[in-house]
Image (cartoon, rainbow, N blue to C red; front, side, top):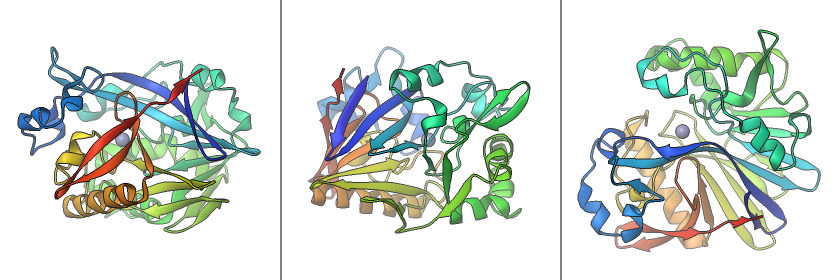
Length: 299
Ligand SMILES: [Zn+2]
């Protein structure tokens, strides 16, 4: 199981899926293959499947353990959820052993104390709930589910998410509404501390109210960057948004700001969709950045 430490905080990666995903020209409308020649790592098999012409795409949750706290950052896509929009077909009616992988990390659902949804996209909230006897129930019955105030407000406004991104309506209905109805949701906002040394920060653009999670412990720093970038090639081309970024100009500005902060602080960044080794540091390179992989330890 992949793991590393940020000071006293243990970090594990709970995989839902890993494999060739999108054609880069689809994911990044500004894509230019010349980027592959600028950093050999970008064309390595762990990040790019040349035969298929597709980016290696991971969907995983980050599990943090410190003291008695068991924290999940995002909850992947979930099992058995119908996704009717054509763009969401790859998330529809999944049957993955994600809960078994969580168990292999030593965590039963009842032990999770906090769930952070960095944003409310289909691949970040799915395991918030699961089906039990045909009924949707919170997967983590003793957890508080922390959701960005701005992000949820965007989806509660009929003129916001529901009108702009109707494919997300069923995601909110089956993966957010049930935990809210169970009284488990707590709203969070920029700068909030959720545990000693662990705080959330606004990173809007990919979605209206995306948050990232900053972990500082014993002089070490980690930033769980949600979907500020999907692939390390966006470090070399920070102006490349994914086709799923909802507020394009803001997404670019946030990406530059977060990558610069990571480079200047020496933080390890933990994105949600990057192939192995899944985490890394950031170096400034002219007007852009480079990715320096950090390898987790398998044990
Ligand atoms: Zn995502």
